[in-house]
Amino acid sequence: METMRSANAHVFNHDADAADYDNDVRNEADPIRAGYRNLLGWVVQQANITPTSRVLELGSGTGNLSALITDCRELVSVDVSENMEAIAKLKLRHLTHRRFIKADILEVFAQELGNFDAVISTYTVHHLTDEEKQQLFALVFAKLLPGGRAVFGDLMVLNNSDKEEKIQQYLANGDRATAQAISEEFFWSLDFAISVLERLGFRVSTARFSDLSYGVVAQKAPSVYQH
Image 1 (cartoon, rainbow, N blue to C red):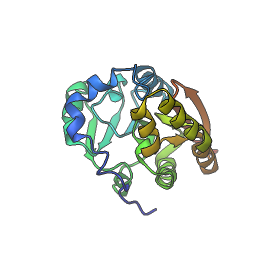
Image 2 (cartoon, one colour):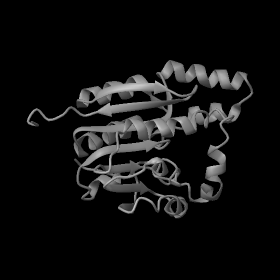
Image 3 (tube, helix red, strand yellow):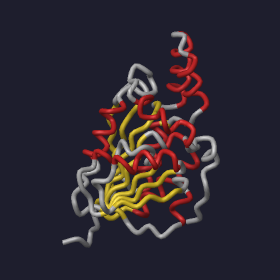
Image 4 (cartoon, rainbow, N blue to C red):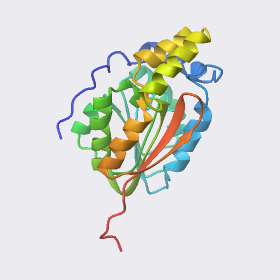
């Protein structure tokens, strides 16, 4: 499958925000950040990572998600921001078999990555358009081993009408910044994402963490040839 860089990778390169990022995400009074800590913990738990797992993290940022992994056979971390990675490297020294690739989360699949037991990602896939999300889900499915799990935590709405309602709700509450984020970024439409993932062959389950954040587990079926 041909892979290409996502259209808005340059917009969402957070090099300039790296120094303040960790303080920013701790502010769970912000609707965009509400549920952040619980969601990250849930993603790692649901990924079923063991000391023998190969793990791919898409959008590794400052390492807050990977820092919750106690051990794995190999971690491949992907991000477009070198400044975020400089912070992550300090947090992730306990993961001795970690490799960082500076790349967009779509274009990285053009590289020889091998297959993975788990793919994890938080607060990154909402930078992709719906068409790019479809492409990403197909690429992830192809790279997961039978029985493997892709676990996502991100900013999501149920569907397009829910999106419009939330924009109006935040505007009515005087929170223009959140309304603008919902309007301008590519929050997941949960109904759309679930239908795409299920068509690919994933078994999907979800959990809600705040008004705007959800977790999604997409499990690939075990091979019928396994004994």
